[in-house]
Image (cartoon, rainbow, N blue to C red; front, side, top):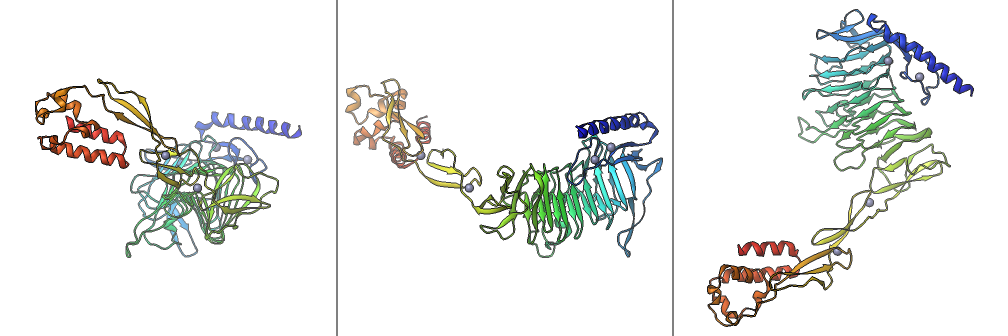
Length: 505
Ligand SMILES: [Zn+2]
Ligand SMILES: [Zn+2]
Ligand SMILES: [Zn+2]
Ligand SMILES: [Zn+2]
């Protein structure tokens, strides 16, 4: 009860805080909410309300980037004690977007926006877009931090345009994500060095010894894709379409969603060489690569995945050098049912909850209904899509499902003993009793067009006397016999009949 009252009071306080903020927005005094966004909820280790005045406005005016009341000037930004650039950067403070920001940066392979302090940034429903450059949209400098939220929703961190590639965000410090959508970024390496940053981490690249905390927001439709090594011509392999976690780094996912990302090797969603924890409603699913294996959260060599608390999300897992019995997830609660939460991305295995671990067990194919075409039947595993026990139909003797008459063909239906598929074959029209047809070797030449149509295309032709072979239609008839022979072997009658009929036209 006390908690409820507290929440209501906070809610009222927030409404009170937000309402005047919107009123005075024209006066550019910013707006106020918790660092997690407009509605405070406890997310992972973020349990207390942190009301923050997002006071410095970032926006575009007449195609120029603006900060506060003036033009946003680039300034010298030190990446290391020895390397510095003249760049757009944000020092410690609380910022919000008032329009989309579009950077079209002239310096290729240089991040566009450096975080050079402890920065709280609210997208406020707007996007930061990088057009025409091969670099990250945002880079958090070593030892600094970015806390990203989006109190309105709908804001993106994206690349735009065909000449624009690179990570959404790289962090050499700490990146806290409460909101926003990191989307449509892709890495495209030029050397086949697996550790090359340029190959990996389409959405977010976490440098060694750094941390990302994801409390909310989404990382979707980013890619770590292949290129060709310019010197060797070898294909380049990308890892971590959504997020790449370097060695000795931490990725704590308390919520949010990583989906629709791709890599051409491992870790379509997340490639982890460090320490990863998941809790809350963390979702890592629906990420893919060509072969569909290893597509969601992939634990590279020495990468670990631990359940950090109550977990309700959905997470596909796989790991380096897998064997039956390997632990893929630790920190499980013995009494919790994780069967709807974790699934195996490596189709040689299934996952099973065993005490405090989730372990790999051999994959058992899940067979659905028989599938079939005109020739074969088979099963397909509903999990791994593997085609199993494919074989030719074994047709029964068939039953007449439509009696033939002198005017119309009949129909015989055959059923496969195994899969119960059916096929039909036409039964010839009943012959018109006619003495003339029985004798003369020249009759076939005498019959009119309609008689010809009637005779051809029916198995009844076989009963014709040998004199027919000398007739001008010999060629067709020989083909017909061949067709009948073929039909008897395996081909579908539907095709056979269609071909025979076409020949008569
Ligand atoms: Zn909060
Ligand atoms: Zn806001
Ligand atoms: Zn299977
Ligand atoms: Zn069958």
